[in-house]
Structure formats: C-alpha cells, structure tokens
Picture 1 (cartoon, helix red, strand yellow):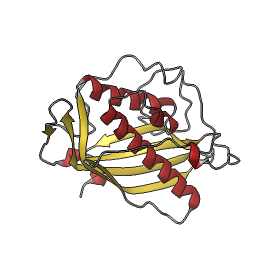
Picture 2 (tube, helix red, strand yellow):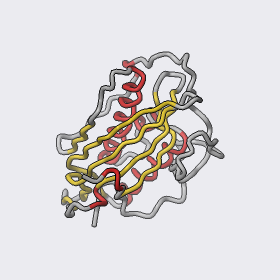
Picture 3 (tube, one colour):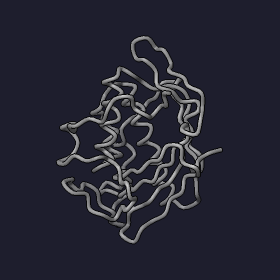
Picture 4 (cartoon, one colour):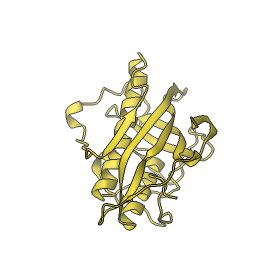
Length: 216
C-alpha cells in the first residue's frame, strides 16, 4: 500500500553535501527538542531580537495544480505563533515542490529547514528521485498547535490527512492510489528555531503514521 509521504526506498546512508556538517536520522524520536544535536552545525538562533524576515528575499515556491496542500488554523491572533505556522507551511510546500522537481538540493527546502530536519528532508526527497516518483493529490494539515519553550524555540504539533494524496510514477504519470486507512493519517511533533534572518526554521521532526489522535 502506497502512501504519499511513505517513501518506497530504503533510507540513504549518505547525506547530500549541500546540507550540514553532520548526518543523522532527521527525527527527534523522543521529542526532546532541547537536546543538542551531535555533529550538526547550529545555524539557527532563537534570539528574540532577530529582525523580521525580508519577504522580498524569500524563495519563490510554485506547486502544480494537481498538488494541493490545505492548511487549517492559519491564524491564531498571535503574530508570533502565526509566523511559526506560516514558515512551517512554506517548508512543507518547498518539500513537495522539490519532490515534484526531482531536486534534493532545492534551495527553498533549506531556507526553511536546518540541522536534522534538513537532513531528513533531503533523504525523503532523494528517495522519491531514486524511485522515479513524484506526488499528486490533496493533503490536509490540521490540529496545528504552537507553544514556545523557555529557550525561545517553538514546538509545533499537527496532523496530516493523506487520504487524497498519492505518489505517482514520474515517467508514466500513473497515480499509485490505495484505499484510505488509519495509516493515511500522520502526527507530527516538530521543533522550530528562529534564525538571525527572522525565519522560523524547522530543526527537528518526529512523526507517527496511523496516530490515534489524528484519526477522524
């Protein structure tokens, strides 16, 4: 059974040179986002004095009409939380665009990702490239919730509904559809750090496919 973001290839054993100085799983399996990530350069800063990002310098991300990402709870009324949600949204769009373009070194992915999250994104994109697959359909992101830690980092949790999102063969365009089941729903627990440019970069990701809290 093929699910959109469940890659068919085995995890890569080497990291893309563009990424960081260290390799890792890309996930924070215990959700302990305050831990230091060994071997990875800390390119982000959670300093509250970081200036707001210059929108003119943000990379352009374009998705084809057959790839639709729906984000619920986009506005909380808190500008800081809304900025976290927005930058996470752009990261997810960037990853889809990179998969569709077949480009593991796509610049927008690393604009919104750093450390382990950048490594895991590269592995995921590369596995689609290796299997000659792309993505299509609609994925809905819901139950998005932002909290802030004492160190200035953000914790963002959310669910995804992939019942209408699928992988597709790049050469033939054949959509690899499968009947929806509990594994079509995924729970994400992520860490974001605000860098010196004011961008909330995702730096750690923990995910659980078939999570009970995301089921309809």
